[in-house]
Length: 184
Image (tube, rainbow, N blue to C red):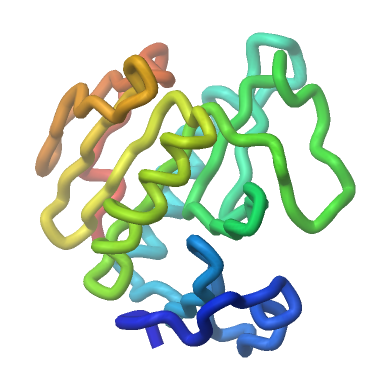
């Protein structure tokens, strides 16, 4: 699983049949399944989520709704970013459904060997199509962060940071992130 689609022309019912120890997604009608991430990946995602959550999760209109591994439905595409965020002005409260159809304002994908090509390819293309304004790609092995913004409907890499850098990156420039905190 992970190197080619499990099924072409898949339905949501097909996705629901994938065992829970896999992350299942549908891109362009093809069902993909990936094993749960390795510990460096999980640590980077959890650490980043904690840092952003404590600084930006507020219920007033200037705050953010931040979700860990939300299921996003965009037409026939079903994506599960590692972290996604919506400005409270666009999403005042979290709906009770099991998935979200409103595109986030920011996503973060933590790269791994089994998902990097999909994250950089199919998923970024779908996020671009849906108008997600900001994307971060974190590589816990290379210890890097790529910051991308949507500019005239296309992704533009704003910055790349590595190692122990201290970062102020859009859309969270009010927070200084110490990249070293993300690495095991």
